[in-house]
Amino acid sequence: MPLPAYERGEHVGFISRDQHLEYGIRTRAYQLWEAAGRPEGNDAMGRPLAEHFWLKAEAEIAKPVEQSARNVARHAKVSLST
Image 1 (cartoon, rainbow, N blue to C red):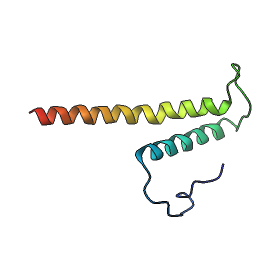
Image 2: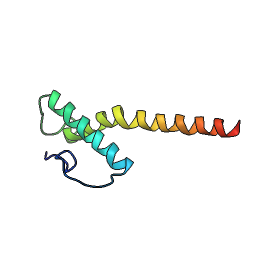
Image 3: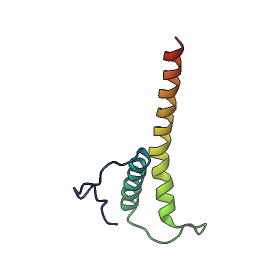
Image 4: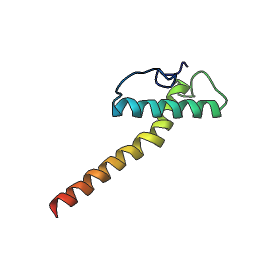
């Protein structure tokens, strides 16, 4: 998997929060795949193994980020109402 331009030190300008989140998930999925010995193919249900690592990485990264955003929004509402 080639490195993204911004990891190679190339200027790419502004990246959105979603792009940053996707990069984090992609990086973590790659780490999980490597730690598992770089398996290839499909799981017992016929899904690509890459999907397994992506979903696991997403659960580790995206869900806590979403929860944190909800906590910030909830705190902002409380602060504004008092």
